[in-house]
Image 1 (cartoon, one colour):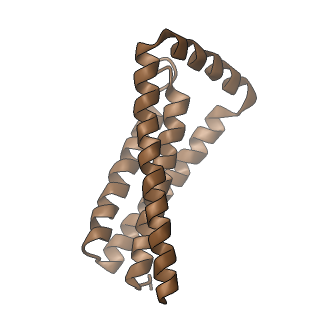
Image 2: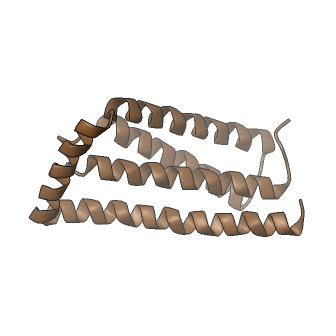
Image 3: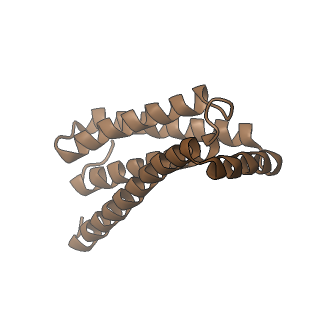
Length: 147
């Protein structure tokens, strides 16, 4: 791998880490303000109804679950095949933990339990995707490929 490719992977990792952190901050902010501010709750309830009419929510939810589970399995397979150490190993654990939490949230929560379910789901899915990108960039920088 050339130095330019390593720099580009490093820039991608840095950008994805920032976007993942912003997504998780968005989760906290949406949950906090939905629970404490009545105006935010009203807006979220209004947007929930609007989104349920516009989008096929069950299909999108099922597709997101399949993609997240597939990416977690790919990350586990890559981890055990490459037997990597260091930062990529820690990132593999974070990928699995974040994927498990996102799948749990998507399966066991709904708008009746948590009014900001759709907003939180989007943020969790984005954070999981960014974490997967970070992991695969780190593995790519190690220079080993799956054979």
